[in-house]
Structures are given as C-alpha cells and as structure tokens.
Length: 223
Image (cartoon, rainbow, N blue to C red; front, side):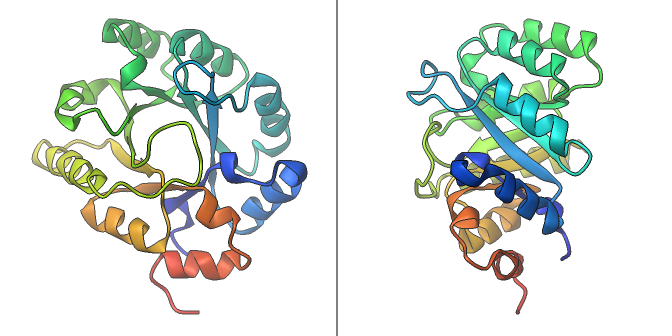
C-alpha cells in the first residue's frame, strides 16, 4: 500500500469493545498514525478519551504507530503538559481555546521535541490563524462541528484548505495541512486536490468491511 501516511484513522469511531483488534489491524495495514480525540464535556459536549487509555495504547503500540493527540478541551495547557509527560509528541490544540498565544510560544520554547498542531473549528475564519504559522507544525481544518463522530463533510472547508495551501506556497512555508470530519474517498480526494497533506478518517474507515479496498479507493486506485 502506497502513501498510507495520508490517512490517519480516528479512534473515536473504532469498536471500543475490540480496541486491540482495531489497533492491530491499523498497524497491519501499514498506516503510520492514529488520531486520539480528547474531549472534556466543556469545550465540546461529549467526553471521550483520557490519559489512562492513552498510556495503555502508547505503551503497547508506540513502536508501530505514532499518536496525534487532538485536544478538544477548554484547559488546553494542563492537558497538553499531561500528555507530554506520558510520551505524546504530536499534540493538536484548538484556536478557540487559546486566549494568549504567548503562552503557546512559551510551551514551544520549553518543549522543542513537541510537534504542535492548531485546529480550526468551522466557525473560525482561516485568516485569523495565518499569522501564527511560525508557532505550529500543522493546521487541522475541522470539516465538521467538533465533538461527534459520523457527521457529514462541510463543503466550505475546501476554501480554508485552499487558502492555507496558497499561503504556504506563496511564503515558502512547510507546515502540514490536515482535515478532520466527514472524510471518505470522495471528500478526501477533494481535500487532497485543494492542498491537504493528511486526512483524519473515522466512521468511513472503521465501518468499511474491506479496509484494504477502502484505502485503495481512497487513494484513487483500482482493486
């Protein structure tokens, strides 16, 4: 399977009763990363995963998979530091949760090992984040309302991707562009054409009975 680094399965849509099987299958498919959604019931309505589950999965799979911890939380600093202590090195915070980006700069300076992402909820205009490019390794465009799996892709997200891609190209920058929400082979290819680098895929991936065929279809390949 080629270019499997493009697709990042979101564990929020996995079968929780058989999570080890799901993780083993992800690694077997040759995928490189998993998306680990942390929801606090405050920033978003739902509550999802926390440090104990991350610790268990990270200890078992860290040699086979990397974890992108997506903090959909109000107190992002506390959770970020907690996951750093557990070994997380890829963490994404939300623009809407940050009051002062000088605090983010302090975290970056203190933890150079951290690969930091910034997520934009659908209501956030991309123009608000362009000046922050030097603080983040990637921007995550939320193409659904954060907090719930199984939503439909919001088409207006494509314009955000295009603007991030154009700004990157015009200024010779290197940040990655990720997209999260409502991703399937059709919407995924639209995102890639718009300039996205990586796609977080939840329900469509985990509900597929033929995941190898799904990945081939996703990348525009024939069986």
